[in-house]
Image (cartoon, rainbow, N blue to C red; front, side, top):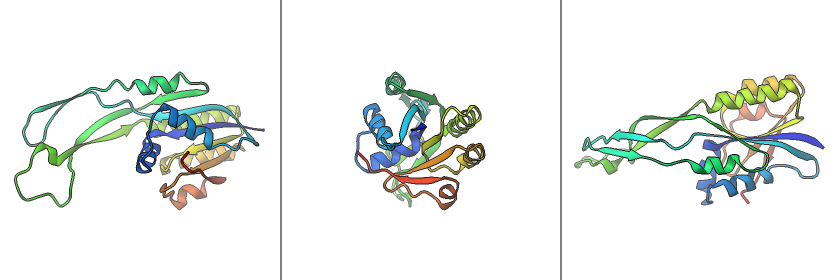
Length: 194
């Protein structure tokens, strides 16, 4: 049996799961992670989930100048972290301004509802790369099974492969994995939504 660590980029996976009209919650995340392994050949050592807690704070609205409060506990990440074999790695969600909901922008009078906040994850890719390097360096596993479409992970993939670990890149429906990422994996495994 190959010892496996499953790494899930939450931002990437959430978009694809919601596009498929599935409910994205801790139960589904666990179900999806377990669907990604070959039960005949692989044994899970750890499931690492990378995401940011929801944004909390007050933002000045772009048209009215009023304030909007964002406050979500993100308790679902705590729920996920308490599950068997799971570890949650939290990045930070940064507000990057407002953007129009529709382009081109309507010419009539605009309201706050014509805009949506734009947030950016910070620190998630770095945490993925560090975990890949750490597991590769101590050789506590044989294979990574990775849910991501981020090419920033390529240097970590290369490091792990040089040390003899295998990279299995998970290809979800509508995932559109770029060739550069596929080329740095040992296997690309198609996983359908459960």
